[in-house]
Image (cartoon, rainbow, N blue to C red; front, side, top):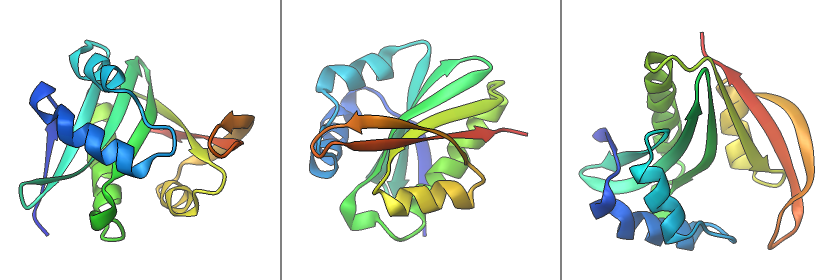
Length: 147
């Protein structure tokens, strides 16, 4: 499997938005991605599979912490370990930037994502009731200590 990891720029926006809209019940707006791509305190990490965008992860930095508010692998690339590879590479990059702890929320019913996070030593630290809409459900709050 030939994977490449790069930071997104504005030319990647159309494909990112396409993946987001196909995958999420309440997708991020185009402007939200523009803000993340252009911010000095955020980055969007892309994973390319054989030169095609397979997914992305958005990180907001407030050193020594970071937040992972959005990570999506396009449906046709799921179940191949690409999400794990993207997350592993991103955590290495965050470590180099001086991040010590990463936080995220995940839908209670998103079992594949929860299993991935748990297998990578993310720990549940709380629950946010009724956090998500369409459908309404709780968010599991998780954190990861970068060592």
